Length: 203
Image: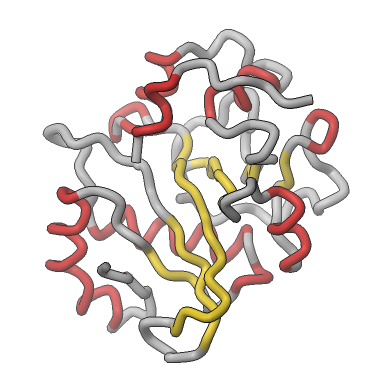
């Protein structure tokens, strides 16, 4: 059954650990509310909302694992849970996470436990580096405040994490900045990241 968003403010929030080889797609969360790994394109399609987007939460390397995800990547059923917070609240051990906790755990660098963002598959779009059709665009939620703004290492980290947790999309990943602040940073580091095989799409 569909749950309504807890706070409409979450809709305007824009932003990795290498996901450990852990559980497979059959070991999903409560009532198959998420998958810890995307093994094929059908996994993605099974989680996408009407706009073709899938929200993700991925543990940050070096951060202390915590409920309800611990060391699992989580690609959530985004049609059922349009926002991260109601999804977290529905998982065992996540019911006491409130909006301020969410901000601290996902958006603020010093206390961040999970990288958060969303994914969208663009089958006809040419990859910025390879030129091949098919790109998995990913955003990364960050807070536009001192110490919390996007840096190149954030893009590196989420690229590493998604490469491990979404093997079905190997070679198709591209970071998509989702705010003016992120675009400014991305413009400065795009060439540097491209030399490392990390694609950034500037629109």
